[in-house]
Length: 348
Image 1: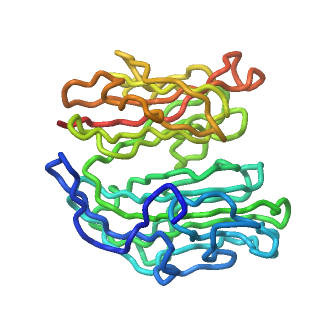
Image 2: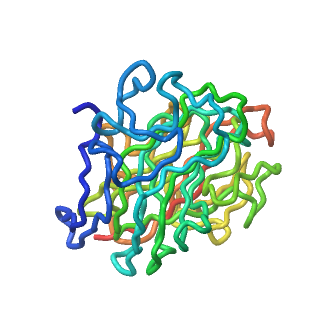
Image 3: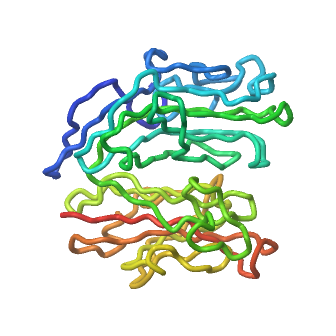
């Protein structure tokens, strides 16, 4: 098996976690190693095999993923410009208990640099596909394999349909690789890590009109036209700390991950640099690194956990954000921007 994650199976059973007295339930999982029976798809979506000439990057797991692209040309340069969907073939009901439900998946993309085109997003429908609501926009135009976690808890008790949708918009500048999706999982999660302080201009205006797209759940736009996105995955348990902070959509420069004991302006944030400052004191610096492809994560390989670096000794709530360097010629005279905010509720 190639890849850096284990294979996923189609199942619906409790996943017991060591040292934790609670459980989560996997509602659905597909790593595409057994075909496409769980999906309906429109061109150019299809099952794709890892390897040259087109897909020579190591997949998150196994040998297959779903790809919006054309095998013969290694791009999506064709006549199709309308919305093209990869849709879960069956509906499912979001549980009303279990602490919350998340959609997890891995994504890789190479699309047009103008973010007004080549839209990628995840949509939810509550009426059998008659009307779709975006729950996650993916805005990075060049994205290495990146892990995403989308909170679906607001749909608790409702029967929903899910789709990944791509919109090229025109036949220009489509000679890029396109979009790959792998390891799709729906799970209940007793450690939902809530997001906030978005740079979409809805609650607080970005410093110079550089607001991100409403619904994207990212920070204010940077000099690359993307908003820094911070997500948290894993368990925030002092006895089983697997929490990971993952940042993407940033510039490929220095980034600082940090923790706060409070929020700024009730969690709405305030203008600071080219973005918003969201995390209030007491502040603890977790660590800094250099983004690759605008992305990085914490803890660093071989480094201390979030709870250790954050000196968390008892259950409670902490807030997290990442601040990164930005172009000197963009927006304010300052040369930094920030991601959105992540709230984490630590347990024993």
